[in-house]
Length: 82
Image 1 (tube, helix red, strand yellow):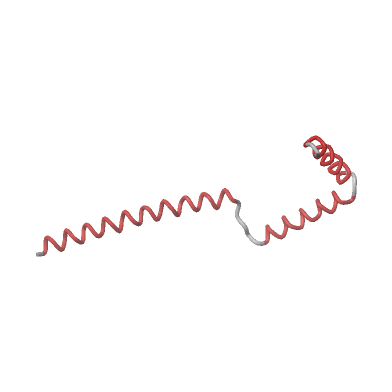
Image 2 (tube, rainbow, N blue to C red):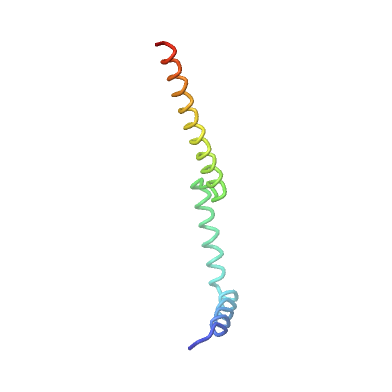
């Protein structure tokens, strides 16, 4: 069986070969093109999404509490009118 050291050495050698080859430039250019394309799509970061999801959860909880309070007040008003 092959051990982990073999794979680590192979990975290091492949990284070195790619670093010294035109493939690195292709990767860099492709990454730049993708980033430029993503910027045009007006995407948000995961952190921004998580913050907005938390805010939405809190807003939903507040809405539920307010709906319950309105229902209580309506019930009190109905009971007082009788």
